[in-house]
Image 1: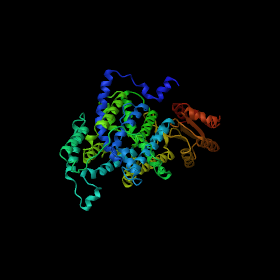
Image 2 (image 1 turned 120 degrees about the vertical axis):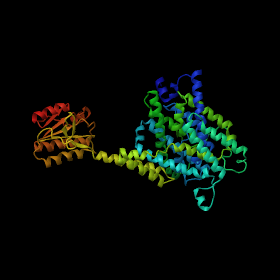
Image 3 (image 1 turned 90 degrees about the vertical axis):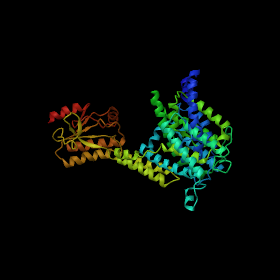
Image 4 (image 1 turned 90 degrees about the horizontal axis):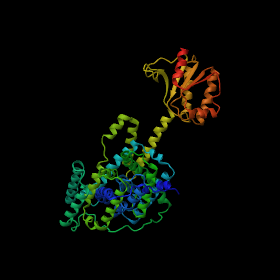
Length: 552
């Protein structure tokens, strides 16, 4: 295998050799991200229904594998809000949260979604990710953010059950409520007024100290509790049975797609900043390998955090060495900080999640979509509504949005834009009826189809021409301005041959202007462009217009 091949499959071989100056900056950036990563990882593990320490496991080996095998070198891979809530939604009803069976099923979710991403990357199928359009992701994100915040309210209020406990006379824990509220205020204020400060770690650290020395944790307060120190042990989940495995396939597919869209949003910014093309294929492979690594640690599917990745760039990260440094600091936290974290109130962790997820809420997004395209706005609203209605099975919201987007796409493909052409005073060819233009020439029907000539559009084009001829029997010339047509399939060729035959029977001359070479090549191979006095072809629209002026 050549050196270039090795560098392609092992992108870390392209990293610059570190020197003292580079390492100082990378270690500083890694520490900055780790200060946010450690408390967020613990909080997000709870969101996924996992043992809290597995959040740190997901921030260790998966982050390292993603940067070693991915094309983007400064992504913060680990626990992420949307992926964690999808994990919890996928496993609800299959096992008890935090149980050994839940952990095993979460590991299988990570394996399945990781294998899907690797298969898409190795096969060059990154385009499949386009199935989730921006409106679908927007609707799902808004709904998921609200559901995540609602799921944190019991811990935020200090309730030992769900919010339904309030209906049965249960009262919030005043200490938990105050600690959560103060933490939330500090986190939101820090994000707005002091973004450089590692506010998350400061709030969590201060809460741990207050909880320990005030006796809140020792007195039975709702705190994180014991967290095992040290590295994760190698883990392989037992086979859950074909029925359970089958029930994980759709959620795994949604996790694979949604988590990589999270990755794409950060990776594109990094690529633009470096002036390079984003290597989506390599990042798919890297994200898939990271998920497999997470499963082998007994953890859950990982993703890319947009906020932490942006923080890495903001902190001056330049290469993958910053991620290696971050992993080192997470490792130190696993070895040294677990006794401190066990005193953190769960209300503070809930505040960490709510503060992080609140940035996903964009109330003005749907009104802006409505102004751009009402159908896409409806798609976003349906995705939002189905996500809320099917909770906790929220992945059906994404599925419904994708189906609606595909239906909208098919509708447009089956109803191509076909217009009759007229010459505008500015010299351009435009919709004759919209701009109230005169025909290009007497007894001429000039039209343009802004689409491919394939099975979806061929019959529509044929119908447009035949209906016009039936309504205007005096037409002797039909001109197809073919420049927008960049592809033709067998159905299009068959229709074209039939159209030529129909026009010839009526004695109508067919003019074709600006046909693209790939389309012309296919038609010539099919024998559809045989010489005839009733077929005239023009290389440019100007050539065709000159002929029509002479006809006039």
